[in-house]
Amino acid sequence: MSAVATKTKYPRRMALDVAREMIAAIKPACHELVIAGSLRRRNAEVGDVEVLYIPKVVEIADPEDFFGRKIKANAVDLELDKLLAADSICRRPKSNGQTTWGDANKLSVHLASGVPVDFFAASHENWWNLLVCRTGGMESNISIATAAKERGWQWCPYGPGFRSEAPSGKGPEWSTWKVVKSEREVFEFVDLKYKEPWERS
Image (tube, rainbow, N blue to C red; front, side, top):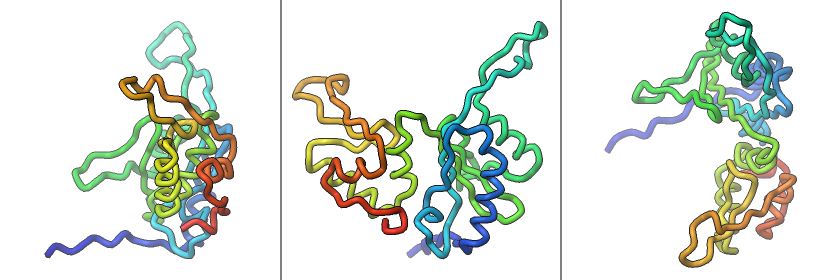
């Protein structure tokens, strides 16, 4: 029987120091910024730092254009590039050596401490929904998804809320959406009692 790898846990104080460093680096590039995950749930030990944000869009000079043309760029991506160049963070490899560094999810390691730091980009449309998902914990998220399914809805954490089942024989474009405008609404729409982040398991 193979052994199951145990995820390393870090003291809350250490993780908070890393979180504050990340906030200082990218906050000016964000419309919204929250430290989510187990830190937001006030756990004494955490497996990583989860940073959820809505990035600003800025204009920069196109590096491939010699005539001064401007292009639009994700301001947070620019700041993260600086952290990578300064060896403050590095991309975190998976067991197969590949890394996750896409538009929505970027998984890294804070080099000085070894604490994993995960960056999750949101939009104004899905902010509240994704905040609930990224705050967790797993049991809380499962409860929301299960309650939604029992009521004929699908919880779409990376979408604006809940999507109804399409009529028989129709494609997903026939579904309707319930857009949520607060964390509380995510819970109450599926008849669950709202819980503060530190009450969620």
